[in-house]
Image (tube, rainbow, N blue to C red; front, side, top):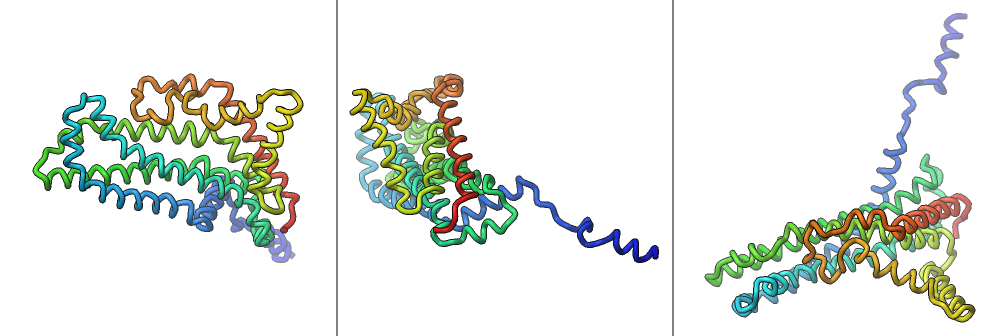
Amino acid sequence: MNTQSDAIRESPLESPAIAVISPSRRMYWSVRRELWENRSLYIAPIAVAALFIVGYLISTIRLVSKIHAGLALNPLQQQEALERPYNFAAVFIMGTTFIVAVFYCLDALHGERRDRSILFWKSLPVSDLTTVLSKATIPLVVLPLLTFAITVVTQWIMLLLSSVILLASGLSVATLWIHLPLFQMSVMLLYHLLAFHSLWFAPLFGWLLLVSAWARRVPFLWAVLPPIAIAVVEKIAFNTSHFASMLARRFSGGGQSAGFTPGEMSMVPLTQLGLGKFLVSPGLWAGLLVAAAFLAAAAQLRRSREPI
């Protein structure tokens, strides 16, 4: 009797060998899944960076004449001339990753319903909220950090190519290395990406994920048409444009709130960033609250939506 009772007490349901996956681990593997399934997230910016390096290598044919012409300029103008191609590289890579982030968000939840893979993913022990948060992590965290890494590597390759060309021409590279503050440019780039592309654009990415969870077809149109309709109705009914102005500030006002404008972000001293002012700005926190509401609604929709 004791043997049978012990066997009953040690049933498989009560075995301590059952693994318990922590929420952080589920989140980690959910993000890894997004990177595995969407290789364009890193292939597109790397391709743009490689294309820009090739173009810059061709342009170094005239580098020596540009250096000689720059010697007649004052130090500030020399710095601006030297920084220009490096800023162009950063802008092109950031623009690419922003476009990739927009289309990724539009397809993130809509795509799994379209190909019916949502039936498989819902069978796994991962909640809808964790799934939505992992997808939001891509444009809010992963892509800004990836953009920073690719841009810094690209700029250093450009600097090394320029140095080799100057040394081969018998010129000194001191002017190039002294007047090109790559460290400050990298700090400003990281600050711009985290403040502007992550925090300030959070409601935009939240809205795109919500549309992706709701729309049955053409999520791009459903993401664009409602804001346009609201702006048009407000203009016709009240002859005002508060909603359109709010959207314009959201797309163009983040740089000023963060302490710089995109065209001169590499020229602003690190001590004048205005980080404290940006972190306490009402527009930032209102946008984060709206983004949180959008993500919560997207998780609820994913729970109730069926495959298309």
